[in-house]
Image 1 (tube, helix red, strand yellow):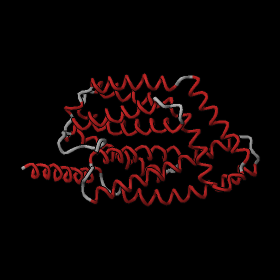
Image 2 (cartoon, helix red, strand yellow):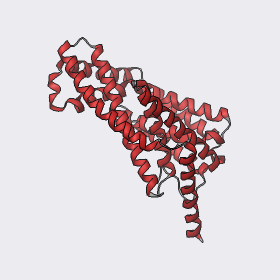
Image 3 (spheres, helix red, strand yellow):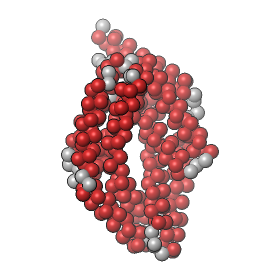
Image 4 (tube, one colour):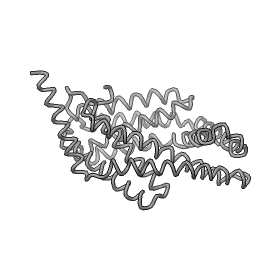
Length: 296
């Protein structure tokens, strides 16, 4: 429950507490950034924080929100290269399994890229840069009057979040370019983190939506990792036979991801934003009423 709203809290109180929770976790992880997994954990905490913080946008002054959001965006930026190198290497291992030996030149290039990205991260002291930006983000979040954010503000932002995801879904279905799929994935994960924050013990229909969003986000994420791998392999001077064999594997797996994503997307985004948020609001009021009855 540390990263979810409590019945005893207003939306603004929960936003303040949970944003601080994710910021503290990100700061703790960057403190052990010598381990590659820690970098991944920092990025994950920042993604959750940024998604949940977006729910406050309607209740804050424009400058308050934009300054904090920009610092949070910048804090994640130094972590991207090392993370991308590692997930690209892992994508090959996951895709090919025991057949990775068929791709010796690409494997070697991936190993070198990971080492170079890790070395650059340490030599340029990106951990210190991120730590300073996280400290500034904490100050920005303290300055923002999150406690004044109410349910009406949250609902407005949630409606916008679903609408952006729906627009991204329709674009990706019409023009399934990697950039469009990646953009859709970002909106899916935003909504997933936001509903997870808002719906700790709500009805089964909401839980089912959360599970579908989680699965869809993972499918789109795995697809994006394969695109990174494919682009990397094509940039290397590997043998044509090796590159072509990898391309065939990637395209076959991406077809599976595409089928799954289309099916999940049609289930999740067939409603209009107003209808979805009306359902969430109904659940919200029932949840709050249950707390009132329990106290009474």
